Amino acid sequence: MSEKEMLRISVEEFSRVQKYMFLIEDKESAVYKEIKERYIELKVILTACGIDLTELDKIKA
Image (cartoon, rainbow, N blue to C red; front, side):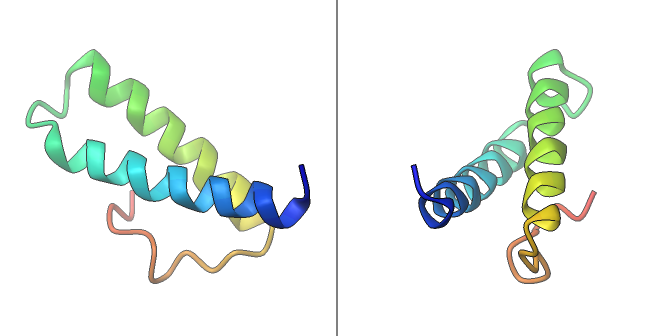
């Protein structure tokens, strides 16, 4: 897998994870906490790769 393809997949997953976070009403649920953990992991990966998340990050947590 090329770096470009990996970044594309990570950006798509980051957006998908945020959509799931918005759908969950109970922010204290185990599901929300697990998804938020993945959100943070993706945010770190993308930031480390030099991706500017200003426009992509709707959660900003």
